Length: 423
Image 1 (cartoon, rainbow, N blue to C red):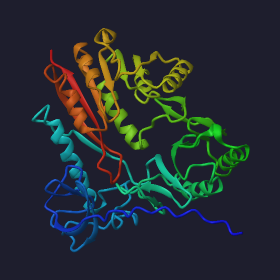
Image 2: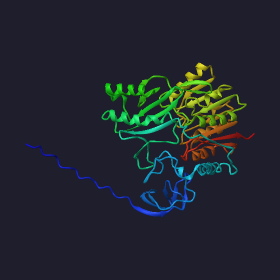
Image 3: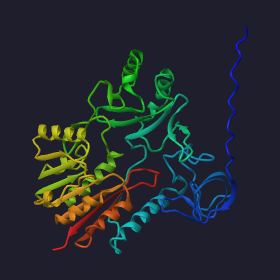
Image 4: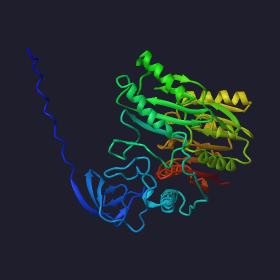
């Protein structure tokens, strides 16, 4: 007898998005088109666009005319109909105008603390130089997600990524297909190019739940593509060479998931500014020090107090410093929950702090209370930089501000702001 199939579940019909035709009136500080409070990525002022509305954001369905200052995107994935690759949002501005947007955005924030603020320099990383990437991986393709739609844009070219990272995209999709059922349908692959090869960390994949065959497949994948290390959710699946970078002349073995600046050129620019500001100092504090991007170079001529929330990074820095005979006192501390107090900074005549995008207001206040003669703020968020610096500008002068543009066609920037205490 034929088995009766269970009744089909009634599918919910998705509510159609509201559509509208608008003329773009202005631009946000991040370079998106704007009509009132509505944000329209990939649009320029003066363009008439048919859009699908998503709350305070709209996706372009059709562009009826081009603004006179529109540039052709350098990448085929840029500004796809509906929603483009989320890796870049400014290619339609052109190189010079995109940089001017970033410069204006930074100066707007800096002038909240110093109305006369100007940029002393702008450092730009070249194309094809980004040494780390977070790929979205599915069996159908690998790349970056749309700006808001969530779909993975299957990457075939990229003007930003280092050429050594691009060849991983198709093999990763093959790996996802081969391990379908053991891997989730979608996961992330964090790739970092180190001096000893690529360090590839999979997130969303539980290494402990993998079968013997899956582990064998990961090991074979690391061999086939000459990876330095392959890990899954922080657990090493294969390590052929220890991932290393050299900081201040000192080799550092990187823990899984260690933070690196996006490009070598960007890191060099940031470091040059920090070292120049530290000239003449005898003792330094590096807060949010990571694996020692600033602490190790600073330690060549002075003693350094280095503080970081991640224990693995602190251990890597301590081991490297000890092997090189550098005078660095490194400690693990959550500087958000427990900022280093002013008493712990007594005797320090130079301090650099490089927090995540959220900034570190309470730590900035402690730096001011300690009366550190020179404070350097390194930040990837101009708004939180201005907020944090407001904690000490009553006693400090902004003597130098530099923009480091290492994120290509993204609106993101790094800033170095040097503050000198008034005598």
